Amino acid sequence: PQDEQRYLFALAAFTRPELLRETMAMTLDGEVRTQNAPYLMHALLVNRVCRYEAWDFLRRNWEQMTTRFPDSALPRMCEGVVALLDREAEVREFFAAHRLRVGGKLIDQHLERLAVAGALPSRGGAPPRAAPGGKRGALRRAAPPPLAPRGGRGGPGTGGGRGGVLWARRS
Image 1 (tube, helix red, strand yellow):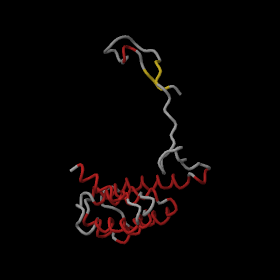
Image 2 (cartoon, one colour; image 1 turned 180 degrees about the horizontal axis):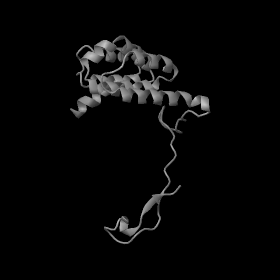
Image 3 (cartoon, helix red, strand yellow; image 1 turned 90 degrees about the horizontal axis):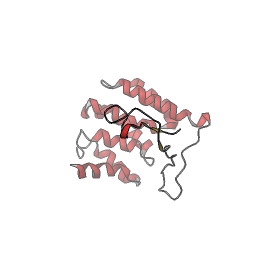
Image 4 (tube, helix red, strand yellow; image 1 turned 180 degrees about the vertical axis):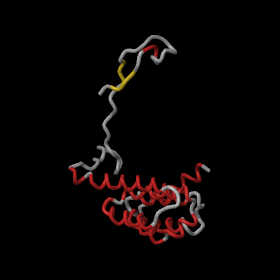
């Protein structure tokens, strides 16, 4: 089962549009189990190559998806809309007209994340940079500060941890 899941979700990582279209179709034609299909659609929605085509596919097939897929999995599928930064108004309008039976609060949270992400560039936020010599799309992240002892109470079992010394991140 683990290998099956790995190969299934690898389908959403293709970069050739025709293969991604086939993967989208597989979510509805019975090729992919209904319990897995929403998660595969989520992966397609965040794929930079096909996210807009996946969004259009989702909108065209919404009624079929909401009847075939488990109610509890639909909000997770819709989480992928946070990648549609330049279609925020369209996404909001769609979900205002198509409320889910379960998970409406999660959809509202996804829409809030989309709004925050969409506003970042207008507030002077810099886009993530590629890591030097790293893979395309890899992000450069600051290393967390090292652990340093900050004193503490004595011995084991007294909450001091690691021999009575509390450890904290330096800031």
